Image 1 (cartoon, rainbow, N blue to C red):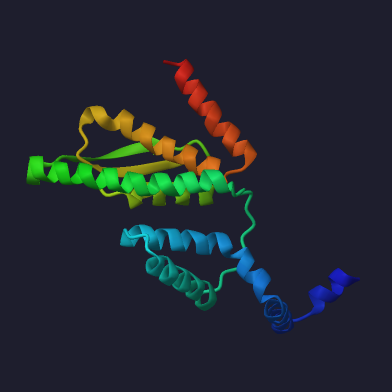
Image 2: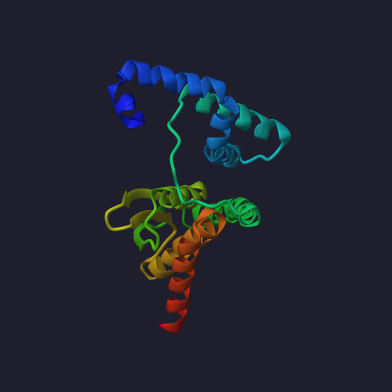
Length: 207
């Protein structure tokens, strides 16, 4: 009977009910969007390249503004936040940006306009839209690398890399898969953690 009554309600009435529930529980709505807001703050800080209180504060303000002005429906995922692993991921992102900046600067000083670049095809292990997006962002944040295309049907990322030669494709694939493993260990499900660890073990055994 309850399902029938719900179906007989018009779309306008259902939208009004949704708005009433949303207004009565604003804190719960913000908590559901906390992972998105945390990721927006992280991207903001990484783009500015500074980690002072002011940058983090304005990042939080902008993330809250995005969540309020551009509300999105809550998305159910099987992601599990592991604080220790997540902090390690953030720290490694910051360190990788420094190392990549030095590497790109050296390539520019040594080779100038003759610096080589290439596109490497990387087959990912997991099949999650959220994890794929996080891996692509992590790879693209570092200077000198950028994910130019994602083939979701085949779980493939096409990574543009500066200063790469023909023999470096395997190392680029290894680096991207290492990023995937770090992301999965930080926010992936238990099954996905087992999957990426098994892939690493299989790669070691095949050597």
